[in-house]
Image 1 (cartoon, rainbow, N blue to C red):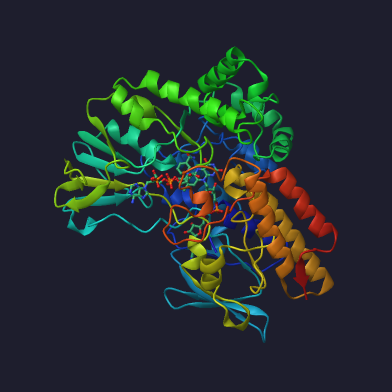
Image 2 (cartoon, rainbow, N blue to C red; image 1 turned 180 degrees about the vertical axis):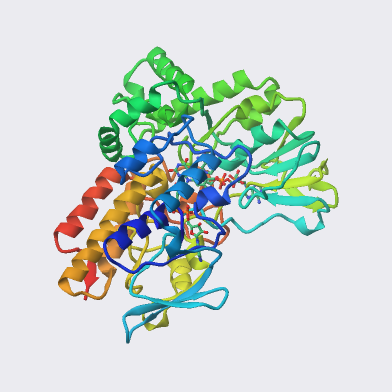
Length: 524
Ligand code: FAD
Ligand code: NAP
């Protein structure tokens, strides 16, 4: 299921290995994340030359990236090209939403149902359904009373025309921080509703310089090896020094240099930023100072300064001209932390203190039911009819190595909860999983084995390990309300879902299991 980076790569690899493969995809086009998130300003924060497949040398030589960080439309064009170039479309069924799947013990196969009543049978179900593919349900009081138009950044309408409108954006995460500056340039008035401020790092995107792409292409295999050898799945020239080992002047100069360079390299300023509270406090202070320098109205600047969680505990936000946008005369900030949103009215919203803000268009950048959302939406029944939704809503997404959940044989889950996924360049993590899954299936075929599933004890240990590693860092600290641990959704079980040790350590765990005959999995 799913025709994003994961599903397309799986299709190509498994079809090439001689399997019969069908990809079922809800959207009318391939691309996954990059089809659905078409809002103005949507852009990737991993460099284009790294946020792309490495598995075909000709493809990476042929494709012409034009900017340092690719815009949504460029990634979508790239994935569409991949689908054409490798003749993938003939095995992808678009506009096909899977509503459920049931394990049939007697045949050792899954039967899969779609919204429009079609049925499929498959030995393996590979859930390439995405970590961030189901928007969070709207939880805004009285939204039904609002008389204007409501748009979501997810599945943004192609024909949205907002020039001259009075617009309100709710949400200041990665999506909000991208859409706000883009909309500010075209709308008449923009009201930004912020609950929890974010640390926003400047992207400093630019067109690729002459010869830059050619230089990358000349050393692509080496570059891909370096990416795979970095915990984040993308090479960063991380500073090996600890922040508190150097004096204040060196600390400031290092932060300043990386702030000017832009992008996620800023997080590599020092080695201990996610381990030592004092180090993290230093980088937080640096960003707060920058906000104070950039934003002219100091009352607004104060509201924009995050102070309740370590930088990084929420997914770091990378955006262009975010803080600068609040200096525009047509932009205002409404803080709903101290003064909560009471209700929507016909013409806008009312705050608890009686303030009223009017607008004709509301844009929701309110986030996702991350990791588990796409799974729990479906009725997936494993052994003995057990419903995955019940198990995961009770205990969270328990898996071994993030790949398989006990009781759900032959259901494999690339680049999702329990693996580095969103804490890495996702394309690197996806490639790591696709090749591991392909090797597993080849081994099963060679040994005449029909089923694979997580061994319950190995699963318990893995989930504990993922949590333990997260607690060695500052990731779980503070009042971030992060989707990393399900805290953005009321009632969702809270556990740290991505594996914080990164792709290199994780790769060792994958290899260890495979080399020992898939230790931690039951093969039958
Ligand atoms: P997706 O691209 O999410 O694809 C999953 C597909 O499964 C979707 O098309 C969905 O329609 C389909 N699907 C789900 N359920 C069903 C069903 N029941 N039936 C049929 N089809 C179904 N990652 C980075 O590394 N760097 C970034 O800068 C970055 N930026 C991002 C920006 C945004 C706005 C978002 C939302 C995510 C971003 N990510 C980024 C994460 C991004 O999701 C991954 O990098 C990557 O695109 C995931 O690919 P995927 O194929 O695993 O999942
Ligand atoms: P998000 O990080 O979860 O942010 C959602 C925002 O909506 C938060 O500011 C949240 O406030 C606010 N919100 C939600 N419900 C609200 C409510 N009822 N009232 C007021 N505010 C509310 O979601 P996202 O911005 O879509 O990003 C999700 C992830 O997608 C990112 O973390 C990143 O991994 C990926 N992404 C990446 C990029 C990129 O630059 N490459 C771009 C977009 C997305 P609180 O914080 O207070 O809950």
